[in-house]
Image 1 (cartoon, rainbow over the protein chains, first blue to last red):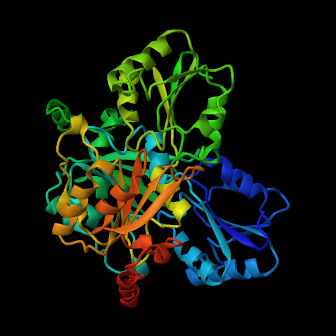
Image 2 (cartoon, rainbow over the protein chains, first blue to last red; image 1 turned 180 degrees about the vertical axis):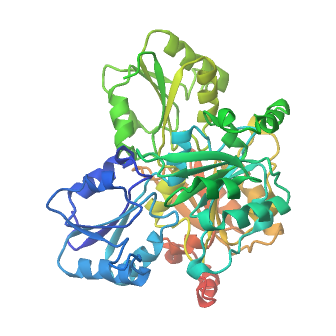
Image 3 (cartoon, each protein chain N blue to C red; image 1 turned 120 degrees about the vertical axis):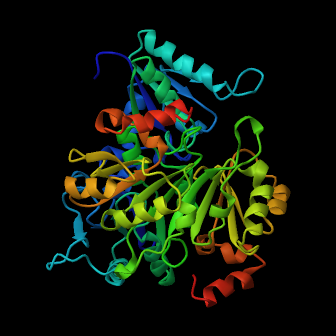
Length: 264
Length: 264
């Protein structure tokens, strides 16, 4: 144990409590206080010891989340208050979106020790849950994670040309509000409307729901489906490998063409 | 428990045994046989129960790894041999590189039940270990994972134009042999020679070693350092946030320019 206070930025993984790491479980068990947000599932919060203080920064009384600077200040104050083991529990992996790095920088600037405990990303968790590999020889040589949500609701400014690469799987976090624009921009730059898409909500939990679609249809399909809460999108040929993909898509013949071309 | 045999494709994470998931630990404890490869660390193999059969497909007597079709056949035969719980343990995440998806497809084609247990990627593990966020507001809007190694040692064919994006962190798996070419191709397309690079070997284990460099110097630096075994590269402005980056780089003034420009 360290002598001074320490803040652990801990990845809670995609939702299933069994997908926490052994290390995350150990550190949660030693925590004096746990600061968590809305992406941490109720099943995971149930793993925190009953006597441990918990602070929900995902929702204020007016149902807005706490602004990031207030969360940063809170972590600094907790470390300066005499508590030894402060856990900042974040959905997924702390260093893949989620602003864990901003918290780490502020804490380090105050001379507070920080340790990052990586977590299973929503991408890996959802991919495993649906049977969609993020890479697969002949279908995807790599994978790209991006966010479909902008700071302060500004316009999306993404490298659209670079995104329109049929050999790279795209995983889009927080893209529900902008999926119509995203799909349109990358189709204009050459990705086929038949390119498969999966959309997943609450992946790896008992509340998991998903749908299969294509770039051309996803905006309509997501609106009709009315998925609640954050949605993760996976765009790419690898989606055809999901169990149930063919049963769920009427456009199976389009995808079969991929297979006939030796691409699946 | 299922009635028939089942193959679990289990992510072993980046190396530290505490970075296995709780689920992976449980499934390893129930395994009849564990098939593993060279990316699984000795510390993790020590977690397998003493009486459990283990098969190393990472190295044949001639010190070549087993060809993938032989591994596929082995998994099918183990499932057909009357064993109930077959664990295929793979470094990192089974569906991010590592050919887990090919194994899943072959098993499914034989009617054998498959369950994928996601793992912490080498990228997330190494990022946490070095204090490098994969995304950070103002420095990287997304992250891209790719492999720097080709099938059958063919020429690298990557979307070089798309890769030369200063707003996206690049994580390159298995890139040691080709890092000179990779760096040259993306510099020709506009990424600055001063762009920071981290190279990590055996990340999250006691054998972890790393170096900090830049795109312009990485090929020379990696050759001089003589890192053994697989090396993971992280390329992008986020590398400047690593603890120790400035102490390790003589070109600190170049990076300071990034900070002065408000980019870090």
